[in-house]
View 1 (cartoon, rainbow, N blue to C red):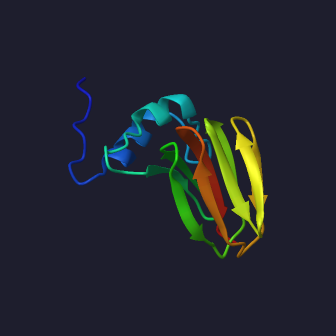
View 2: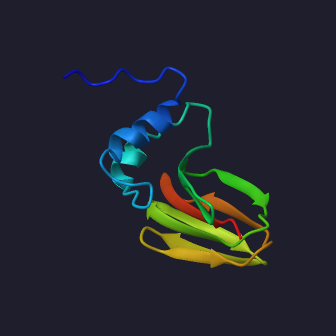
View 3: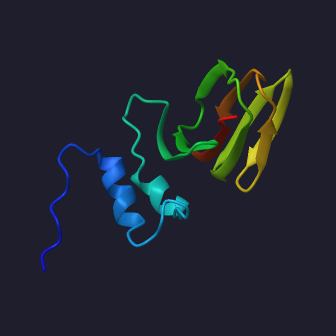
Length: 132
């Protein structure tokens, strides 16, 4: 039996996720962060790019690639957020304090904390934002 053809109205991300999780329920959504990061391509003039991996009732999980030497300007979100460096090295400036985040480190910010993200190296960060 032939595999069904892809839905042309579905986004490439949603098609990729369905392919990754075939046979799994939406209650279990595994991701290979190394493979996902390789698929994130930075345009030559871009400082960063991102892909939302999961958007559920209570959390949103996004993988972001950031070019060395660039800064994501100060911003804040109305929810709790964690920033976990998967590869590279970033510095998060929050409440006047720089927080060094080499690969394998994570920072968790309370609601409404203004912060920026500066990349020391080409980096990939996993961002999790609560929805509550």
